[in-house]
Image (tube, rainbow, N blue to C red; front, top):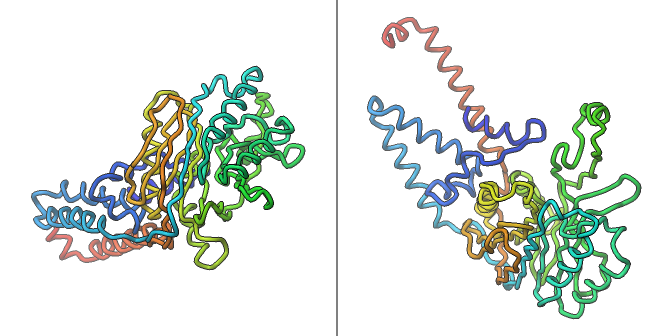
Length: 384
């Protein structure tokens, strides 16, 4: 019930599975189970261990089961579910540290555009990534030469640029997007549109528009991207973006990886999160979001790159370890070399189906056993 409750929190009313209890075990022994059962499976296992402690001393096998789970997690940490793919790439992750209250002030937009142009063009790299909506204007509102100048830098330096920018596809048609500029200068720019949108922040939920209209709240709807979107080709690696809190939904990232097995999209080898959680200020939300990204790396066996506005900008390896990180609330650039990985973990293949299916099955078995016990008067007397 505990695991199913946390799973339900991930999809009821579009879902907000922030800090599921399974995240507490990202760096602990139970983290070894993440590539098999994901964060909700870890929640189940931690609840099971708590149940074993509660049953002491009546059930003498309870501590043995708890210790076996911990030992199994330690052992699983030594298994490599994925293998290196091609050669490592150089990355530069930009952290502009633009105050949220200034981000969309018209008088400051020109300075923000200049800031990110300077940060991008300071040094070449195979991949240079900005935070979510680092470019604070719609694509059709930018100065005519802004993207052209960045494309020229990409070609001259042999760099790939991943720009966080809102895109307009026509009147009242907007998307929270990542635009990828490649150094070949010939191909159409890559584009990823955010799929899992924030209620009220990015779209008006079904049945709530009357309230928004009545209160005269200036909210519109972003266009939702497709669940399956091809990754960005970068110097022999395939970089799969996710924007802001999309990395809370591990099953959606797993579905994108699993789709590569059927040849529907190329298999991503590196994950990239572009975020702006300056909305939360200097709060525990910053390290919590970093830990969420660590879990996605564990579940998929792939490195996760994080380019954020105010933090935590970081590089996470396939074992979920933070190998490089910028201080929060400071402007800076994080440079690193990152190895991509290929192959699919069990969680990448099946998502939450294993945990949810097993949980419902166990509830059914418990129901049958409970009914059988009630129908057996002799056993009921013995129990009393």
